[in-house]
Image (cartoon, rainbow, N blue to C red; front, side):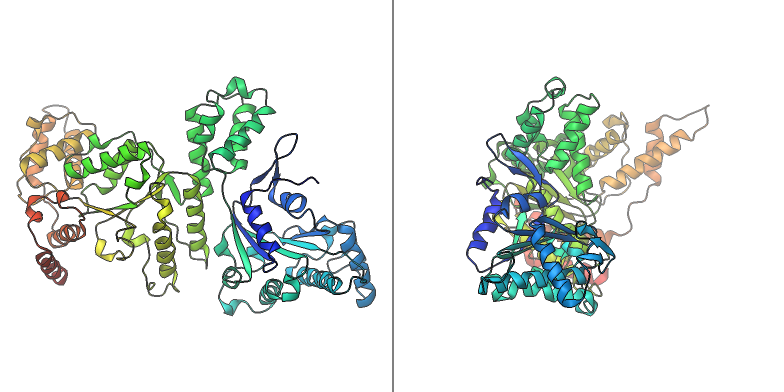
Length: 592
């Protein structure tokens, strides 16, 4: 095969192997996608296993593939492996080469009938590797000079787990694979072993943490990679020009964050069904595919609202509007790494995020519950989420109830250190300065004191925006009208009642009051019905605000303590010095 230009990750593998210090590679990330292979007649796209055997490992005499489902795949040089097995049978009295075999194999012409149990399969592969190593010492010995081994779904061969569960075959598999990486004789020979797993953290920790193997991430394609693939796809589809209402550049920009396989499915789905490829179609299918790829752990926030729909919070809105402008202009060095929205429950933190999403013009996603009960599954979910976020190019990530979701430095009671591992992964990802302006984090919580200090520090969540309920009558009326508009009510300021209590009131309380008024209005008899404003005034007189005033006041003061800019604080809090804020927090904490 002519010398082929390699992808960046494949070039990295080749350079590492040529140094003759590492011969084992762990490939993770976008391993189930197609890989581009440039050629004189255009670019081909091969599945990863074919790319490895036909392109990257093309100089090797033998390429052996194995996974627990399909068993052996002799991808190249099968005759060498068959010859070795015949010799093996002769000396050991086995019958792998003819009739029987460990799993009833009838013929070497059916390699899938060779052992499928990893312990037996790895034993055969190990002995074959040792023959190649021996031939390097003594060229007179028969056999091939080089071999590459590809273990697909390696996480099912050496899964993540405690040492207690590594007895028996799994422990033997682990020791054998580690030996392939650590044995100097193997490292110095023309032998390479390659483990494939979508999530690095699904693999056993000893494999992941081994300094004798190289970990190589295969990324999702960027916009240029998608454009190249779509162009090649369109060249063989005569209906593309007729049905595509967007050009390839716009189409590829809309599909960033997807694999080539997913892009192919989206494009061919439209072409085969005569459906026009529009921006709306692409947006809908992209959302479906990414949410599916993330296993429901990411959900797109698509909002038609803007910051104009937010009542009050004038300084916060002004700041966010300015940052939205910087995001649209892609002035990344002027943008924060992230925001922390704080304030008592009901102050509109989530609603503010939704309205901010309508201003920015970049993807907004909410990180949903990514915790699992199985060992390593939570970390694998996070790894998958991070991979998708990087592929999206520029994205804002919202984490609601962040104090509950983000883990603790020391871990939680009875969770086997899971909370600490979550914290560590998030902390590393959020502190990566190369992500500034590309992955923007928004954490929202009413209890920022329960959030680890390192997660909310400058350089991770730079801007802390506190939100407070309105106190003045004008501010309360503005919020009242906003809640009425949200519920589809056309009320004028004169229709609003005067509240019978002086303490702050949150948006969710006013929404609840309005819903009760609508309920009472709709339940009136047909005759003698009172107009809605009159019913609303009556309900307002009967309404009782939250009785948990101490806890709500504590949340207000915690928001004051976290604030990073004086402009966000209303007058009643702006003049408090930090010592006084701490004293009040201590008093409220003791009494709650």
